[in-house]
Image 1: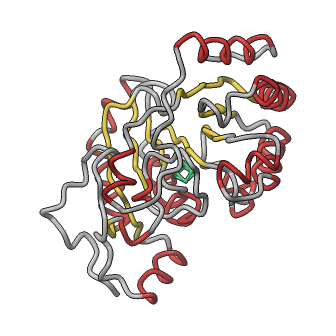
Image 2 (image 1 turned 120 degrees about the vertical axis):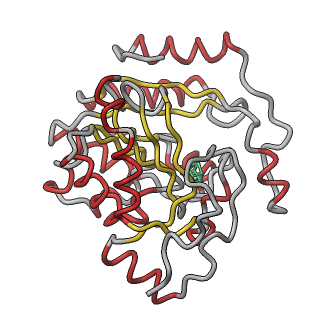
Length: 280
Ligand code: SF4
C-alpha cells in the first residue's frame, strides 16, 4: 500500500488557485485501484477554509482531483489528473474537518466536497461524509452530475445538499463545452428531484459560449421544472485559471475571452428569477 500523507511539507490547507501537479505520482496503479475501491484514501488537490460560496454558511471545502469533463472554461485543469493530487488518508481528512467542527456548526456551515469531479472517488466522498455526519457536520457535494448513478438512494442520504453544475441543457452545446454527453447529468437531476433531495444549481456564464439567451432560458426552464432547486448561482466566467493552462502547456480555448459585464450577468440572473427560481 502506498504511503499516504507522505508529504508533510505540502500543506493540505491551500487555495484551489494554487497550481498543484504530480503530488501523487508515486502511487502505483494498484494503489489507485485500492484507493478507489475502499475509499480509505483520496487524492486531494487542497482543502480550503472559510468559503461562503460553496453551500450554506461557512464551509470547509475539499477539492479532489480527477475529472472526466474537459470544460473549455475550467479554471482548475490541474485537477483533471487524479495523481496531481496528494494521497490523503480518510482519517486525516476527517481529522482536518474535525478541527473546524465547532466553528462550522456555529456558522451554520459544513463541509463541501468539490473538485475536479468528486464522484470519480465516490467511495472516499461517502466515507468522508459518513465521518462528517457522525460529528454533526452538514455535507454538500459539488458535482458535474455525470457519475450520479454511482450513488445509491441510501448513499444520497449522506448528502445534505447537491451543488449541481449544469453546463448546458442543449446536448450539442454541452458536448462543445465539456466534451461529454449531458444526459446522465440531467437524469441525475431528475432522480434527485424524485427523491426530494435539495439542489443548488450552478451555471457558468461565459460570453460567446453559454450566454445565448435561449440557452439560459432552457437551463432556467429545466431547473424550475425539477421542483427541488433551492437556489441558482450564475457564476460569471473569469480568467483566474488562465495561468494554469499556460503553466501546464495546454491549449486554452478561452484565453482571449473576457468576463461578462455585470449587466449581462444580471440579465441572466433575471431570466432564472423570471422562471420562479431563487437566483443570484
Ligand atoms: S467539471 Fe469542473 S473540474 Fe471538470 S473540467 Fe469542468 S470545470 Fe473543470
